[in-house]
Amino acid sequence: MVNEEFVTLLKSLSEAFGPSGFEDEVRKLVIKEMEPYVDELEVDKWGNVIGVKYGGRRDLKAMVAAHMDEIGLLIDSIDKNGFLRFRGIGGWNEVTLIGQRVRIKTQDGKVIKGVIGS
Image (cartoon, rainbow, N blue to C red; front, top):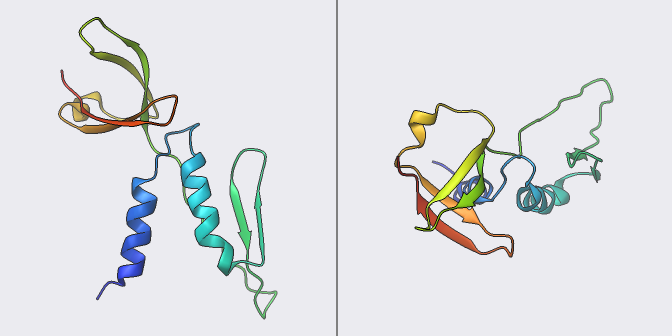
């Protein structure tokens, strides 16, 4: 059986806003969740979160690595009918975008839900 606490954490991480270059929300969540379990925690100049947990044996080392960012879209313009023109952040097949639900985060932090059309 899956641990509900783990499912909740995974859902929070998956739903956090984090397109490449805009990972602050994900970073804050990772730091909050990681802090109780590590002996050292730092964020480097590139925004990577690095946690160190010391064990009883110095000859054994393990690393867990993961991406904080996700693919995203950057709005270039809004036409007179309210349609958005955008470009991609990251790579994917454009055909897969049609019909996809999106969350648009405005400059003031408001989130607007939308759907990609043709």
